Length: 78
Image (tube, rainbow, N blue to C red; front, side):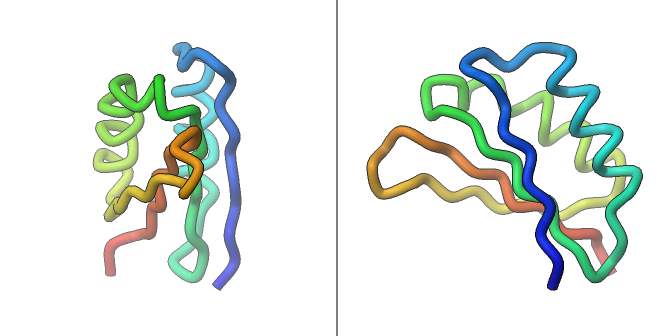
């Protein structure tokens, strides 16, 4: 499976959400999108989840062992 990764900055902005939208449009069923952000911004992940759900993705989340990073792993629904 091919992975595409988007790293968001220290603050999640509307530009970051737009980047996720553009990436979601390009992802095929044999790829997954990984969105990484710092844990302190994970409360703003709702916007990212909303965009991904609208583009027919299933999402799971994972935190890094160091507690600093938060990952959204998104795959197209079959």
